[in-house]
Length: 249
Image 1 (cartoon, rainbow, N blue to C red):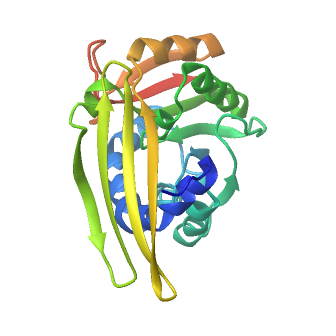
Image 2: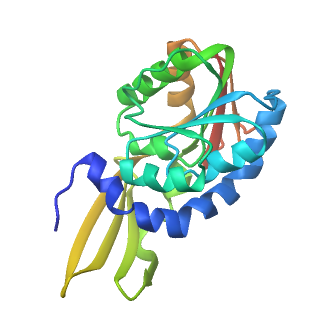
């Protein structure tokens, strides 16, 4: 098993994410985010920060809708694909907990549950502080988050994979409901000269509750906090699946 740090971990599956998941996640998550951007009157030309932008598929769509887009991601390998997929966007390689950008954005979005990769509510709060600082007054923060029901199907089974001439991969996932921690495991075999190299990567995710996230947003100073389901409709306090949180600076 190859030990990797947080940056290279995401770098190692950037090729797979770009080829198999980036466009699919964009297509799946696009309708509710489009609906909510319109609800909050984001006009053409508005300046949007795509936080944890991955391989840039959502950034490209937003540009096609007339927005100005900056993407931020911790993985330089992801961003290499993003610059190809969205050549008219600006991209920054940085950590969502520690970036420093001036208050120039009308909206900050994070569309695919990337903030579940942050394993403590204290670190989630650090992200919220940085987002708050980057927003213009009255700016909107929209982000998707997997709540606990999203992980109930994670049972250790293989969920995806493929075989190509020069590489093969498979992934599986598991969830511990007591700790509210999920494990996403991916194994990659890739051809290096005359031999094959195996990479085993484990990515941990954390399930948060609506109450935790709402309280943390409020503690940073966000107001008008609301929660929506995957159709972009208001969610009840008991809703516990993939949720979209909206708040205002």
